[in-house]
Length: 256
Length: 275
Image (cartoon, rainbow over all chains, first blue to last red; front, side):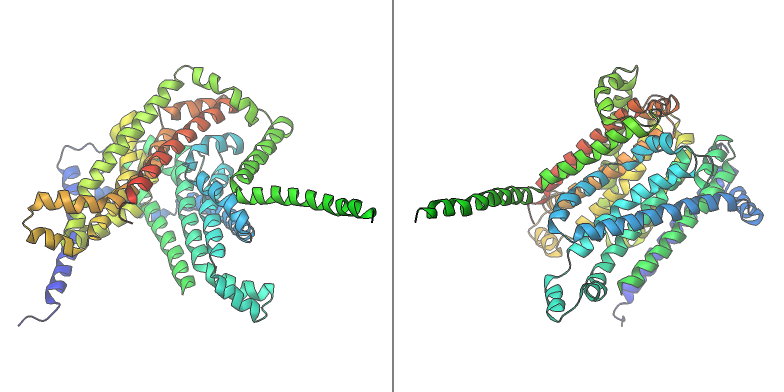
């Protein structure tokens, strides 16, 4: 007799197998094509070579200055976006009229690909970190301010009335009613702002800069040092995934 | 007794002005769009004053100058062609991203097994920062339009796959079962049950794809370009010509707004049939 759920479990195992098989197949194809195939090493370096480069990058610690530049830009940009976004969002959310005035304005600007303004920022702030910080802060600002407005603006009226009638002051209202109700939405906005700021900063380093991880990748591409470039790309992808995981974990913690 | 009329008018006159004032206020409160325009105007005035009196004209031009220089920008040798090239890149990569997204999203959504196997991989790929691999696209596809189109597709295809798969999965199984029991074959089920139910999520996915394609194409354009607008943004930046640069960026922003608005309208129009 078959146990109930056995088929489901088998199917789950099978899809896990497909996933692993897919990854193994890609790696094997990559290895075979670059070792015995006719693929140019200038387009696709050998995976073993990439691995050696990655080990050497990590062992020599040469990534540290670039990583420090990128993370520094990200930290400052996010701090600016967060403080401006939450402050303005809170002030706007206090009046339904202000919400009607500003909310469409912000979401309208947010729907433009803001990376377009990068040349203006580079002209204005130069090629250094300042233009990356400014652009990252600009892009990170919009999801944060929009979610702060949504968070504070949509607090259940009944909760507010109940707290008022029980004699809550403004500070108590903020601390015990508004903040807990709005926090999950604001945290989601902060996570989105962080992600887009990170992407924008790496992207603008790729397009026009003097230092940082994005700049390093472009530099290696221009020198046709493909194995090292792939290694750096893998490194940046892991860093980005790690940062996003941290931010998501913070968001999940705050949601509870 | 003779004082009464003047007293009445003395009382009424201020009340009249008050009510006019309140009426004006109420009108403003009923039309937040007017206040929004006011905010934009104030920002433009601040920009104008700052650019005219405080900032080096090598770095920033006042909006009035920019507006009157639009002709200049469009008359610059090659700019209209560059705008055409960029529009062509956007259109082609949007179309291909939607087609490829539906072609992948339908089978992934229709089979539970394929969904469970491949969705995690798709989500993982969607989550990686694609700007890091932009140089690879340029090495593979050259510095012409092909690399921009490819990069735009790689941005736009994932939201379409994910939303189309989700849209297919949300069909109530009873519709499929009843269609089958009434003798519909595979194609008829696709045509009469699955496609109509996909339409709302399909148009939502088109909106997200447009946003993503704009990002991908513009990123690649700004990174390296020989004929598109990326070439001219770097030329204007190196010439310290903020008037033309702001003008060009404004034209592109307008293009982005029009494209976004077109797909958003389509989503509103076609998305409401069942909701």
